[in-house]
Image (tube, rainbow, N blue to C red):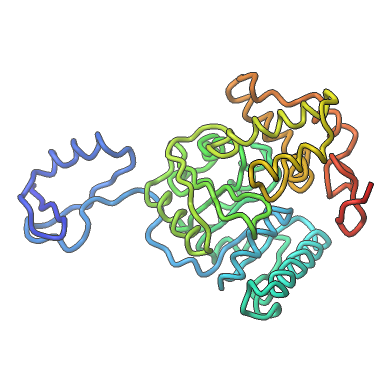
Length: 344
C-alpha cells in the first residue's frame, strides 16, 4: 500500500515497503502505523519507539543520597512535584533537611524567587515505591552497583505504565547492561547529573543499545525543562563522555598524592586557579564519596580492561579504612560535624 511522506507539504507517494527498507537502514527503533490512504498525512506515519511526548509534572527519585537529594531539589525549584524514596524514614528526614538548607542558601543569594516553604511543599517522601504508578518519570539514584540498580528497575517496571520514562543516574555503568533486566528497555535511558547537582548545568543523556529514540529525546527535553543543558551520548559506553575524561585527571591527582608529589590542598588549588574549576578533584572526591568513585572506576575498568581506568592503590586503601569523604568526616581532607572542612 502506498503512503505519503510529509515534510510540511504534500510529497510524492512512496510504497510502504520502500519506506520501511530505507527507515530500517537509518534507525534501529522504528515501528510503522498503518495509513489508510495516500492523501495528505495528518499524523506521523513513523512512530519512534519509546515513551510518547510527555509533560513532566511529577517524578519519582529513588535514592536520597547526595545525588538524589540534588535532583529532587532542582526539580522542585522548577515547579515539578517530587516523591523522594529511600529505605528508611531517618535517611529521608536527613535528606529533606539537607534540601531545606540548600534551598535556603540559594534564596539568601537571590537565586530563587519563591520562598522556601513553597519549594519544599513540592517534595514528599516515601519508604516505598508505590508512587511509581502515578509519575511521568522515575530517576534511579542508588548505589553504583549494577545488581542493585537492576533490582530497583525490576520492581519499578511492575508498577509503572508503559508510557513512563525510566532513567538511571549511573555515572559509569552502561545503560544497556542495566536495561538487560527490564521488559521494556526502549523506555530506559541514562540521565547522569553532576555533583553538586543544583550548581552543575551539564547532564549527560545516554542512549542504550535498546533505548527508544523518543525516550532519548524526552530525556533531553526534561533536562532543558529543569534549566540544565543535555549532553547527548549517542552510543553507550562505560563512563560515557565527561566522566571518561574527568576520571583520568582525578585518578592522576590521587596517584600524585599517594606518591607524595603534592598535597591535596596544592593539587586542588592549582586545578582551580589554572583551569577555572570551582572545586578541585580531591575536594570533589570528598563530596561525591570515595566509595562511589572507587565503584565507578572499577565498573569502567571491569567493562573494558583498560589499565588507564585501574583505580589508584591510595583510593582503595582509603575506602577500606572508612575514609569516604564528607559523609564520614574524613577523606582527602578532614571535616567537622556540620560538613565544613577542618582548618589545618
